[in-house]
Length: 305
Image 1 (cartoon, helix red, strand yellow):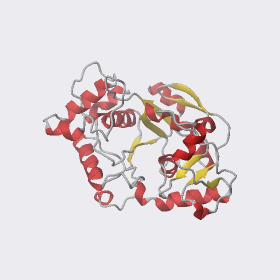
Image 2 (cartoon, rainbow, N blue to C red):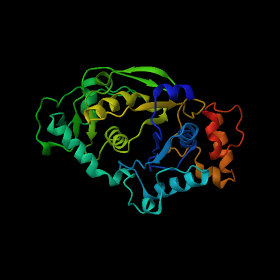
Image 3 (cartoon, one colour):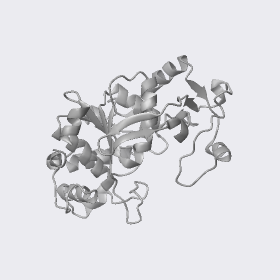
Image 4 (cartoon, rainbow, N blue to C red):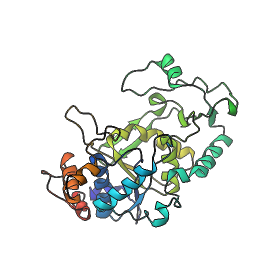
């Protein structure tokens, strides 16, 4: 792993991020992500930025944010940037809901280049054109691309993506090639409620916060190509490297879910588990160690040395 990082020529003091969404309580899957994020950073002289991804204000709750920060403290994962008392009080720009002006500025820059258009298509509208297959992403067919709708016709906005393939290297999965135009079509960056989308917000955040390495679950691998394309349109020149790690899954292969209350850190704490036991269990669940032996947050670097 260290040799691979050397080949990528990450800069001194390179930056990664832990970016939970406060839509539920932390579960073992989040602990796995923390192990990879802090483990890689501590083993290879990186820095960890804590970012709260609360762009979806219809689902995010302050109590979940307080709980996730508390659970992270309890586990022993301390970021290099945040949380401070000011961060907890809402004064730090590492919370997406505080960053609306940044997203507005980014979309304005794209609009001035003719790369943004108004879209009024619902999911049902898109499904009627391309079909709605369960568990498969629907590609936007470009219905509104040439319609020249007035800005007030809808709050939704899409960014025009080119047809070129995106090629990149994943630290765990090797060379990758994706075709965003075929996967998703033009990217939705603001939804019908006027909220910034995940794809747009995290791309702007990673650019603005000078993130060098994105470490996240394998379920988000398909997002990488489109985010790289969007970042380039936004003027990103700093190389962005990626690592997509295994997920904790149920016996039937389904990933853990906050909405289902799966294996919550809160519940494990309540039943008397130690932080070391929870981290050890998570590391074992994705094959980082052969048994669920306890492991402290301070020791996760050994998995990536």
